[in-house]
Length: 289
Image (cartoon, rainbow, N blue to C red; front, top):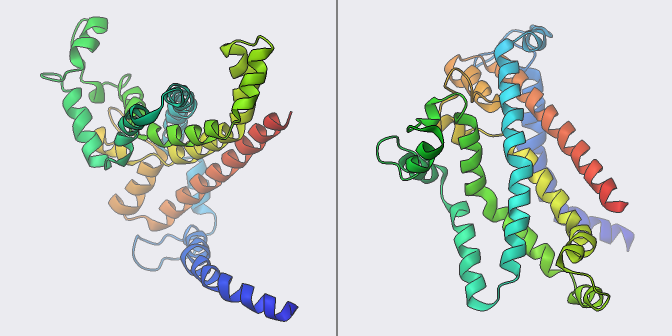
């Protein structure tokens, strides 16, 4: 009986294991091997040991891209999580068709392709006829070419990213809020707890697993930022928005240095794994207290 069950399990999991080995494990092994060579993007290279890793450690432009990536993460991960939770709390209080319409409005940007998002915001922020320039001029005294200004460029890319992707966070929080029983709130109301206390002592602890999930997903996604930055600023001005994935793209596809690009890719992979695991463990331990 046990043998039959094992055979059945193997038949069901076998295709996945084969696909996992072919699509993920084999390319990862090849990537590690490539990082120890001076190979171009296509074709074999000579074994050079740890030279790529030594170069990586001493590469100033690489560290600049790491700094910009962390700056972008700082501008997006926590703000988009807070905004997603706040919007979910508001939308969750609505009901019927009106709630569906409001939810659809917030989720609509998320289904737009990145090229459409870029065109929308290039038009909105255009210095000559952009509808957002009067607001910017009110605070600065003049129109600002935000994607050509080193101080404005990264915050604006972060703002656009939050606007574009927040609908997904909103849905996750809505699902979490709907799993909280109304009985908790009724009991708290009978004890005289107001809405703020209900949020602090009921909603926040019970929604914490979803919050930890959103923070972890956002951290992984924002560490891999590329599309918006490349299309809006191409890393400029003066490398103010130059991020790690763009640096990998430049090494591989513009400078034809496949071996070194593989080394930087592995560094980014290690960074994502370490930070994601650390953050998730910290958040989970906080939620268990």
